[in-house]
Length: 337
Image 1: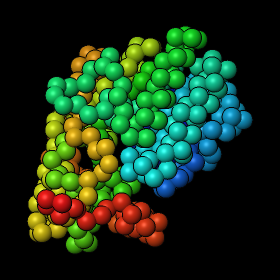
Image 2 (image 1 turned 90 degrees about the vertical axis):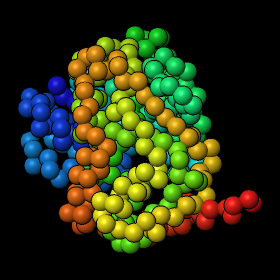
Image 3 (image 1 turned 45 degrees about the horizontal axis):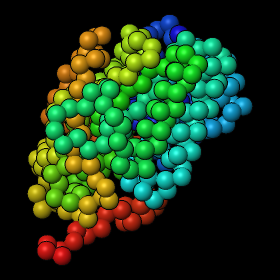
Image 4 (image 1 turned 30 degrees about the vertical axis):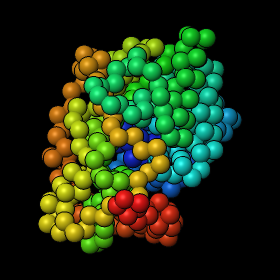
């Protein structure tokens, strides 16, 4: 299989690329990535010298480039997206352009090249806040942030292409993901790297919002399972099946790094903050995917990776990073205000 992996220099995308070249020796991978703030070509260093690998810097909205690359490949796996909720609150237009129009551009190229399969990598956030139970694939999409709305919009476009053109697409919806090579703006690498430097760990609101954390290696194998064993026209949830609050993440990081609890800092809650996500992943498990890395085990190995790879994350925590950090994390409102 010749895969075009868009957004392949990002966190989950690069893990998928490394896994594909490791586990599927007959495959070749072309990565297309714009290298925005969260895209990092160094994430692909482990496969840089593999003859089956090629990197192209470019935008998925560039129709000429995308059609050229699609014509020389068999499958598109679309990771390319603006993906941070907090940034979507500041610049929603860029999210709509990349996540929706970019997906349209890719699907048109895949149709022209007569690809047998297209994988749209999405998120559990398209379901919106889940008060109880777990989301299943045929639940309505009720996004509540510009980011999740842009991802839901892309999904609706994929669905329209499936119905209108028989487009051979599979959609995956992954839960919150963590592990090596994650840009240190997201909660787990932010907490780890701040704790290593004895800086505060900013916790939104009262810290009780819960997420289902999935290790990046298992997210990648889940997408691979959907690609190779999933049924065209089907959506698949990818979640581990646990619930972990922001306070629990902070406490675990501080405990494992032997740092004081006083580093926890409660900050003003995110606007429209979803309190809970939960996924039912029965459908993908039925075709052979089984996550097994517990949050405790995965967090410990992730901490070890960041401890051992300061040369990777320290340059990322520079001027632009701290400018956004200061804009985003404001002191919590006084009690009773």
